[in-house]
Length: 390
Image 1: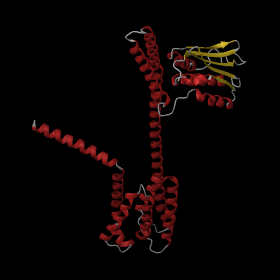
Image 2: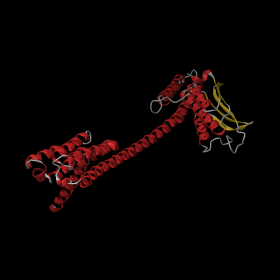
Image 3: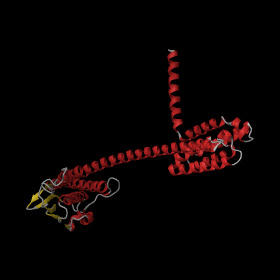
Image 4: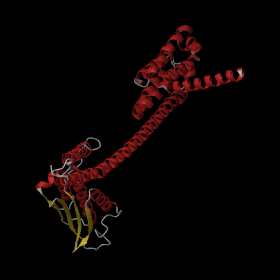
């Protein structure tokens, strides 16, 4: 049992260590530190050569200088030009090309193709100037061809890898942004669907509760329960108004749900698109509840869209009126000359969802809906209870 406990403890400790090591290795600062250490390790291989051929630095001083140069890579993400400048200094002073590889990669990775290209040009030009001056070590290229075959591939390859990594970063960022946008759109659509259901179903039930309470109050007129029924009716109306204010007027994300006030703008946009609109709205219709106004806007918007799609250029007559406690909406436009097969006929929407959506919204508010050709016109008629006018 003791051996099993020790083995389990070791296993857990190993798993924890791997988890922390993986998290640490993915951290940007940790990656920069590892990059600087890798660069220092590679440059340290040339410490004996620095003192023997390139300059008079001794071993400890050369190690200190190279450590300071590698430390410039710690800021390669925010300031890659710093490590690039240090790399050029090392080329001119120590004839050291290793740091230049890391600096050019950092330029391409964190500043893009233009910076990487400019960095390579500056690096090759500066190295060539140093090559033409006395003191360039033979092991760095004793002829121009050997020098170019050494210097140019180093710079181009390092910057090219950095630019490729930069492109990958951009692709990953774009994919993440698209995924986030898609998620937000899905959430928004679900919120809109839930809000519409609340508008339609809960609002309708509250309306029925208010009407039923008023009926009961009249039946109990003069009785002990009359005041209670009146209070219940007023509570239902108040809840309905609160529902309208919270969900309909404010909208899902703070934007108000379009109502009758938005119809003139809707008609104007249709006219600019080539579909003239004759819009007539009763003044008292603006006192309707926001739920009913939103339903009217939805119906008119869908009808204008269908008319522009199936009978472009034809005039559309829109009438919204309130009479005898009911709200009436009628939208008429001429059928296309080519006939039902080519235009706005008994099924005005190709997918069939527009008419179904209008019908559903009207029916959930206790109204009636019909759509179809009548006397050479395509006519959409909607009727629903007007409810309490504000």
